[in-house]
Image (cartoon, rainbow, N blue to C red; front, top):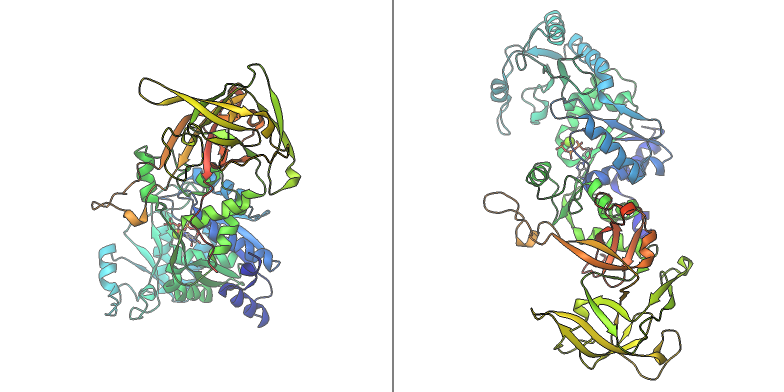
Amino acid sequence: MENLTESKNFIENIIDEDLENGRFDHVQTRFPPEPNGYLHIGHAKSILLNYGLAKKYGGSFNMRFDDTNPTKEKEEFVESILEDIKWLGADWEDRLFFASDYFSQMYEAAVSLIKKGLAYVCDLNADEIREYRGTLTEPGKNSPYRDRSVEENLKLFQEMKEGKYKDGEKVLRAKIDMSSPNINMRDPIIYRVAHISHHRTKDEWCIYPMYDFAHPIEDAIEGITHSICTLEFEDHRPLYDWVVEHTEFASKPRQIEFAKLYLTNVVTGKRYIKQLVENKIVDGWDDPRLVSIAALRRRGFTPESIKMFVELCGVSKSNSSVDYAMLEYCIREDLKGKSPRVMAVLDPIKLIIDNYPEDKEEYFEVVNNPENEEMGTRKVCFGRELYIEREDFMEEPPKKYFRLFPGNEVRLMNAYFVKCESFEKDENGNVTVVHCTYDPETRSGSGFTGRKVKGTIHWVNAKKCVNATVNLYENIVDEEKGKLNEDGTLNLNPNSLQITPNCKIEESINTASLSDRYQFVRNGYFCLDPKESELSDGKFVFNRIVSLKSSFKLPK
Ligand code: ATP
Ligand code: MG
């Protein structure tokens, strides 16, 4: 990990140059989400990148809501976004800003452009504007309103602000170049009329600035040095620079683009997630099968694992996607040394040790994490009746099956050797009880060397255990099988959620709290579902964060 993070990414090279040649003498970054949805793993990359750069260069990081489009924005999202960013550990200190607080300054900046002859009010409607804009191969045509006088433009723009015009009746456009090879420079709209109430400024404004005009101004007002955004804005950079140059803010920010993070086998598009939520296929935006930050948190991912993931992905200029398995690798790496192990049986069958006294109890001292001695030990109670995993017994085992079958001996983890003597079945032919005998000589830690067994299985004391529901997950879509159906709907994996309601966990789990994460031996890493668990009523619902097996190999 260390040397992977030490080599500099291309953004750091740009910053180094800027600091060296004096373009900037400090670093100021920001994360500028629009409060129109929940943040996902891709946003986490942008947040940690911006925050990480500020920290690395001794600069600071601003949190700013880019709330200039009231049609889609909601207060609800402001709260959830702040919670997510805090959880990720990006600290904006006292620098929480809202673009809507700059509406007056943006208006003044537009007025100053008009006064310089660099902006005009245009009466063409949306279709006409598109038509006049030209195409990639053909230049555009000037709007018939392009040569209005400064006075007339000032008057009309003020009237737009005062509410004299309907939505779409007039717009303010930058006067740049209708024949520019870059379509974004063909007199882009910078203000539009929209009689919509804004979640913060209410009805104070009925004109709103367009993103390409507003964003550089927001950056300039806040003294942002490096305005980092994703690749689709590369073609907008000349316009960003134009706005920075022609508006009169002291600070001259610089836009740098990087490639978005794409993950395979997940659903990130807002449109699709909305469908899944509305059709109740998932349990809200934080369903553990999704990769919104809220969902990852609920699933049990740690901020550290997400940070490791983002660092492994690196920063690049070309789009590519990363497999979900890499995220799983990161959470395993993070949890292996810090989560206690417990024995939990997900699909239980009874195991009775016929030669073990009925009322006898023994406590075994068990290490909590063999990879981290500091985590100490705990006592686990052993007795005559236990639960084991259904799959750890077979009536007719295939070759190389080393677990329990009639006549075979295995080690019960941390306890004794037991030998399968017989078993019982119900009327449907399902095994209900496995009968064994144990050998008292083979107690774990006793130094017994008499003979060896090939299998070790885990168990839970049937009289001293906690009942729990466990949610197991698979990817919600499978890229290899095709993410979409022919009709454009998502090709969902019907097994993405398996609820196992009858799990048995060793008693020590009673002290679990919502922030704890455990390794259930042989079964993976788990945490309590914060929505479904009711700890005061003894209702335990665990989510599997990740299984123990991985096909993922860290790239060299
Ligand atoms: P939309 O614009 O479609 O509503 P968005 O995901 O771009 O969605 P924003 O709120 O504009 O949402 O994004 C905030 C910041 O996060 C932007 O700087 C954007 O570039 C960055 N970002 C968004 N998606 C990703 C991604 N997949 N990877 C990296 N950064 C991203
Ligand atoms: Mg966006």
